Length: 147
Image (tube, rainbow, N blue to C red; front, side, top):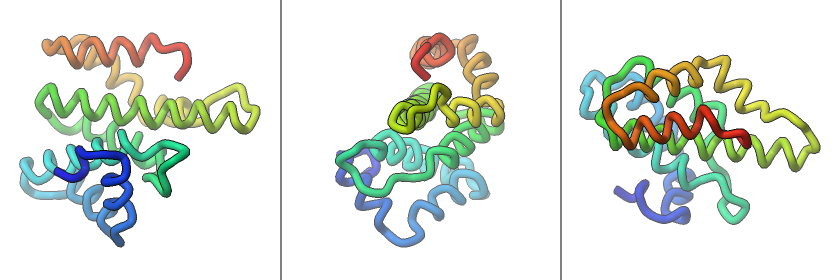
């Protein structure tokens, strides 16, 4: 899975015309749960590796947060994929924090967007799940002061 590779490999995927859009559509609209799951893995991995000053164009962080929120609400994925989706949301939220600081803003607009999407509610739900790797990450995201 090239999306699970380096940041440079993730950037190659972002530069491929219409690939990101196809992965997003597959994540939400594929008739097969297995295809939705594989697309979710690719989206999460690309998002986790795409927000850096040394990387070119990354996915729209608002779109990433929306995809993660809808996936967590609508799908029942295994713990490792849920953790990857939480990691992707953290990276997008941290990117929003960097943007806010660079612009001299006090508030992270992406954190407000995540709240509007119900993503923080999904973090609360996942904080009570049976899988420790998901519980801990969700609790961390809820308690993080810098997001």
